[in-house]
Length: 356
Image (cartoon, rainbow, N blue to C red; front, side, top):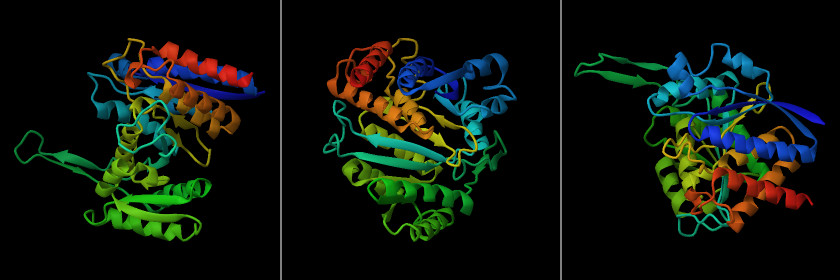
């Protein structure tokens, strides 16, 4: 039996509802595949910030370091500015643990109609690879003359050769295992330094992957093509900001951000990677028991795959696919009336039925 130590950070809002759902699925699939979980739950959240003045304790990163992976629910809640919650928890984890790849798979499932005409189930299936630790989300900059008419703010984007190379290589290697197509998001016609540098590195690394056909698209045109023809894409790689925006747009194209998963990966596996649904804390529905657990469960499946348990991951995603297709227990965001528990129960029932 294989044992894994998993840090659970339910966080805020519906994160406290969907992480337990994902844990139930992990326990069930683990029992079937000889996996034993040692879960440690941390109460790090905006609620902790309001009571103690910090999203996590000073030794928080060291406490996470001993785990094999991290499963996060959501971060953010009214009363705590978003930059405080993100820079107090999520971003420090990504950077301390070199989670420089943010991986966001996009699929249009049977049973989840896309709002985009022509985005058919089984045809839209691509991955956004987002650079996750530098780029536009740097800490370099500041504000001057606060409160005066000439107040100003400066934010510096930071693109390093090492940072761009490693995420672009990851994307090209992923494309070799998929359909062999890669699209690079750029804006080198308007951003005069960082984006031409990004383009140059992409072109240099592309020469190492002759089996992958690739192109580059300006971010504005690319956003339009996500809507007009999402089936054309296979692997899309972009900077921190571009990847962030594109992946949320793509989740909407897929029918619901409530089903969208993500992985913050340290590909070298020298540090724990972190897995999280991308729906946010959704304070408007928190505590009502109607949150969609699919994004968290799919994120848990990505964690299984990262930990080397591909068959177990497939069992989970197969059950999710079947649950969405039969429509027997859909949450309200998908047009159903099921609660979080009922939706999770149905996934577990389908997993058990497939194993018989």
